[in-house]
Image (cartoon, rainbow over all chains, first blue to last red; front, top):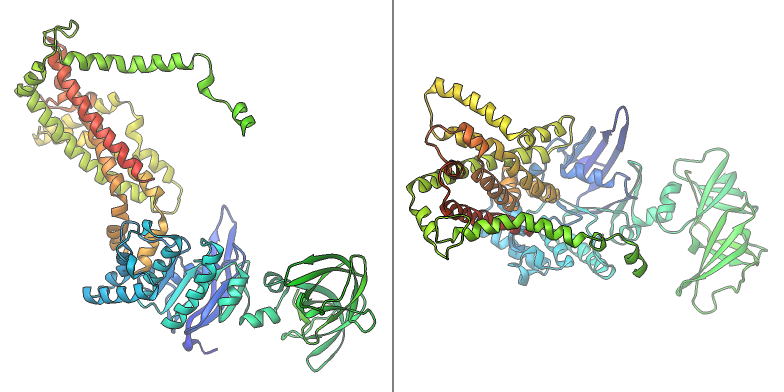
Length: 364
Length: 270
């Protein structure tokens, strides 16, 4: 990827915290990622995975122990936050309580030394953008959580940053409001054309909003790709497990042909799966199958078999929990549209068929 | 819930609680109440009630020595509290807006040291120290009192300011920096306005503490530099008239006013 076209280019960045004595914590471990202009990029991972640390390094609230952070080619890793054309929407919004909504939004422009008329015009524009015009003279303590969220967005967007950083901004909102704000954020990103870097631990939020996602764990980026890439072709167990429901199978490769590999499952039965891009290791491999890509069928002609342990009804679909011969659990998701569901009951031995091309061999 | 309430220990239900509490309030406030009541005595005695009158307030108000001492007290308290508040604000920022490092606890102790050193020790030390300086410089003005008061007022001003800084959301300062405010602007536009109630509270506390100091003032003052408390102490050695009560009552009223204001300012933050 051409690094000059990247809005943010993180190169070999580590952030090491010195603990007590000789201990050190690698909050980020040799992370490299290029974030393109105008994209909605999400850093996704569990708490403590380093996503917020990476965001803080880009914002300038913290500095990398090693590595470079380039903003359109310029290394900004050592600049203080007030010298970076990057703005942040904080998790708790961090609105200035002693200022009005309009004063909050105008603060960045004021600090940049813009003229009064220019500030007023831009603040009005921002208020309109987030639909807060009628509340511009309110104190920030006099508006609701969702409104505070929009003010925080307007305040961060007002100085026209090259990159907007969002640190779990939706986590404090209730479910309904969060759904609305997800759509609102996509709209704002589209209308402003600013690169958004969004941090979340919510995989569903990441899937629905992002152009691309970086899945992080233990200070490393495990996989970068579009939501479809990450969901359909997870690179390793952690990614597959973190995003959506997944079944893991143990298998042994018995022959490859044209990007496909023939696998003997440890539960008996066999399966054809896509090869991982980096090739295949010898010996036992792990295969992932998403529950919606499997179906219950006659044992004869199926890929493998299992015993029905539990049946859980979810309204739109039903999850059939199986136990395979090697003891591994396997879940089949059946759509509940009329006539498509095979009638099974607990204790039945049933066959499982996997949609061809959907099983993937992954790094364990 | 009911079980829990019955099980939980409540000091209010202990036998004798009410009696002890009443006794404490009685011992605390009865002498003060007596003092205030006799300030309005029309007679010459501080112990025999002879009728209501404001004559002692009037007499105190017109007493040029009282006027002079009161004026000096306010002057010293005002300057000392202002200086102490400035020092305390800087100290509070330096000790809260930093990562924890070895020696920080020592600095807390160092700043609060005047609370722990016996006042008489500080007084004697300052007496000796300042007397040298008085000889060298020939200056015998009110500056020594201001300096001495500043020193012991700093911890009192420091505590409310530090409490306020510690309760302040640090992301606000980060947000200011994120929005292109260099450190000084971030301080002036965000930290300082949010800190102001703490600073005012610190100032008032320091002011009250300075206003009623006797020991250090008595040791440090040059001849003729009576403050209101040392003047009153001097009067007690001679004839005691209800004028002393009147001055005390007025003093009490002022202190109550300031402390109440301090309380409300401090409460507003939460």
